[in-house]
Amino acid sequence: MVSPRFWLVDVGNQIHTRARAGSQIRAIFRTLSGLRVSEISALKLREVVLTETRPHIIVSNGKGGKRRKVPLWLDRQTLSEIAAWKAVRDSQWADPDCPFVCNLRKGESGQPLGVRALQHRFKTILRTYLAPDRVEQLSIHSGRHSFASHLLKRGFSLVQVRDWLGHSSIATTSVYLHTDPDEGSEVLEAFAF
Image (cartoon, rainbow, N blue to C red; front, side, top):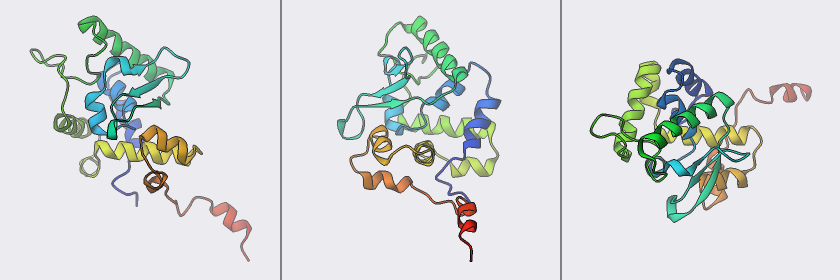
């Protein structure tokens, strides 16, 4: 059984597939899964950089006041949806210091979402797209765990993942190393007696 703290890749894929193309939900969900909830709340439009050869997020005030650059490992469709979302936001407020994730309701439009509001909105999104038993197991921080676990599983080094997550210590990042009992079974079979 998968630990409830971690998303399976299918959670992100289900939301991406079921959400309306070009929606804020699709753009935001894929972009922010490696960040702390407080970093998502504080993220500004200018800190989501799509114009360079390697799209990335600048976390200007991470835990401990640290600044870091987090690569966006996204497909072209998702990157174009994020660019479209940013263009809409830029045309509405034309201020690069506006929050990337904000309230879109009339009268409150453009206001940043606080940590509690983000957590509530996240659960609401999950309830729309996932089975109820999965919703209660997941949190925004689950996305951070999954982001780290998937990067490590794909062969990125602990040092790279530590830097992208903003950890001070490799020991903290090593928590995201997991073993899958089925992984590598073909290698073990080759050594069977």
